[in-house]
Image: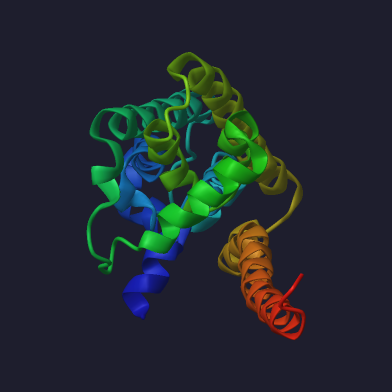
Length: 234
């Protein structure tokens, strides 16, 4: 449990990375976006926290050097875009074989199914952008888009839009909070859970809707069968 909490705590990551925190954040964004095994890495919370600790006051309170905001504003979107491009490329080249493996601690077929669900629900362009703000789904959306043969040029355009909006919005939100809220570093861990909760709300809603639909459909089929037996000539 302690290890899991550390992995979810962006302050732990920044403390571990030390002087290489700025480059480390960029590398984690790439891995979380482009590598299937990176889905457990912090994304939203790490970007907000990186923005917070790019302010001198917050960084000093945590005992680290401030992260370079200009470097993050340039490097992190590029990493997010490059990671997604890698995921799309692998999905297009390898195909569904990427997902033909049994469930394990790191791989769950339901993650792929959620990404496919949003791809079909929103359509390719909107799904690529919306997925950026949904943990786990954003990792699996890119190879799923490749497997489902989303045009590479179209994917690139919406990948750039989603990557830039997602990264810049969260970094600047963190920077603003770091500037305006005294002692903000004390509230980061509770804030992480709030961010994660808000991020998974759409996923939870879809799961509930899917389960309700699964219950309703069999009932409808049952009534149709009863009606047909009562009126065999229909």
